Image (cartoon, rainbow, N blue to C red):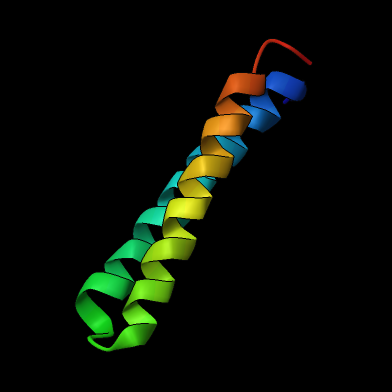
Length: 60
């Protein structure tokens, strides 16, 4: 199983999307106080980093 840089970035993108969705779900459904906003903000940050990883595919 040969993984090149683009394959690693693709896997990292998908993993970060799933973690971001999980954090946003925790913020929306588990924590009803101010901590929920923090979880949602960190989940949005994971989406931003996944977007960067996706943009880097094919360039490195």
